[in-house]
Image (spheres, rainbow, N blue to C red):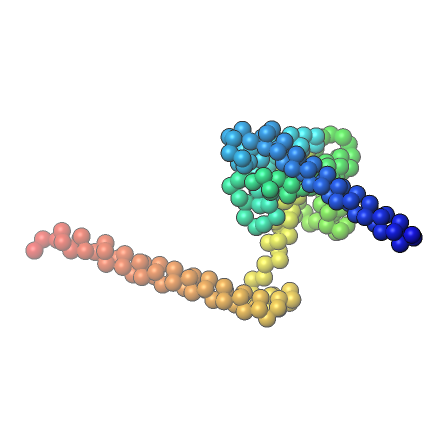
Length: 245
C-alpha cells in the first residue's frame, strides 16, 4: 500500500509540474501577443526599428530620459537579439530576448544615474573636472584617470565648452573613456604587441596587417614621387608649344 501511495503522490507532483510549465508557456505566449498588439503599428506581425524604439521608451521611462533618452546604440543592442548584427525586424518568438535586453539596459541606466548623483556632490546637475575624475576612477577600479583622459572626454562630450558634463552626457562620457582606453591597447610595433602578451596567432595577424599598411604607405609615396616628377614636364609642355618657331 505504501508503494501505491508513493506512486500516486509522484504522479500528482508530476501533473503539478506539467501544469506550472504549461502556465508559464501560456503566460509567455500572452505576453508576446500583447507586445505585438501594443507596438506593431505596421501590422506586420513583427517589430521594426521604430516600433522597438517605442517599446524601449515605454519601459525605460524613468531615469533614461535624464540620461539623454533611448539611444541608437540601445536600439541596436535590442535588435541584435544576442547576436553580433542588428536585425531589421524582431519576430514574435524573439520578443522575450528583446525584452530581456531592454530590462538590462534599464538596469544599467539606473546604475549610471546613481553614479552621476553620487559624484555630483554639490547637486549642481553637472560634473566638473574633479567630479568627473572621481566618477571615472570608480569605474576604473579606483585608478584615477590622467588629465589627458579628462580633456579627451570633455572634448568629445562637453558641447557647452565650459568644462563640465551634464547627466544627459554622462553615458557618452563613459563611452568616450572606454574608447580612450581601447586606443591605448593598440600596439604600434611588433615589440609592443609582444610586451602586451599577444599570442603567436595574434602576432601573425598583427604583422600581416602591418605589412599591408606599410605596402599601402609605400605605394602612396611612390605615386606622390612620380606625380612630383611629372609636374615640371607637364608645365613645360605648354610653354614649349607656345614658343615661336
